[in-house]
Length: 298
Image 1 (tube, one colour):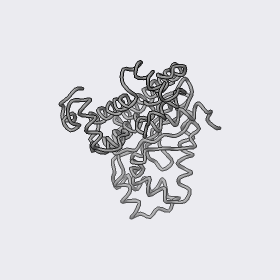
Image 2 (cartoon, rainbow, N blue to C red; image 1 turned 120 degrees about the vertical axis):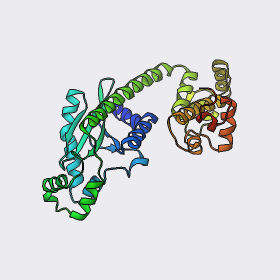
Image 3 (tube, helix red, strand yellow; image 1 turned 45 degrees about the vertical axis):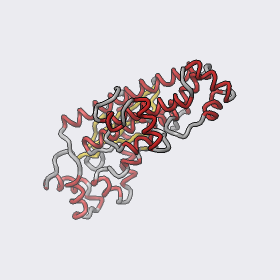
Image 4 (tube, rainbow, N blue to C red; image 1 turned 60 degrees about the vertical axis):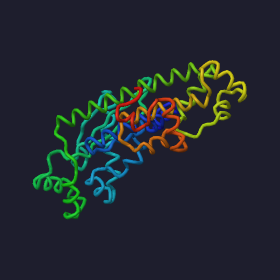
């Protein structure tokens, strides 16, 4: 089964969205559990590059063994239909005896992706639990010393917290779909208005290098005509609007992350820290550090 073009686009928007990046980072920072995204058929898996090394030590060990990755994918695909049919998240035990979670993501009533996480021990790490794990996977010819080290380093959450995690994933799936639907409607409305189309283009690409000619080209107007029309309609120049959008995102990240300020500036499209500091102070009235400490405008 292949995804349709609309489903593929929705899948790409999800895995590339800032919302997913922030959500996955929060889950990992709080519980040391990775979150990934499968496409609708369950054939392609994507995760944040920054979290690619965050998988459970036990899964990392198992994946080195022949045929295990295929077993993992088949296990996920076997449980996926039940989650899709119910449109609810599903907690299940994988082939190796670990706890996994899967939540289907729907957009405009289309199944477009699946949030997956877990790789959790079913019970707190113990000698009896390790023996049970080895017994269940005895056909894999485990190297006991390596398997033991990986097992006792693997994460565990009580069942109540696992259920809470499942509800959190479902809440995010519903939220991200609402956002995607609203953006789709905005793009449809903006299609006939060059200024609105340009604003949406800036919103979608503010973290990339942007120039006036590039934005004007997207609006299908000459650079001069577009620049004049944009300034009259919006009240600021294209350059100033781009700066406002970038600073708005930096402010959000300053409130919700502890990432270095320099990294946030570059991540949001500024090509130099000096320029970023100058623009931030001009628009916010304080330095980025002061803002993070609770000073300046909200």
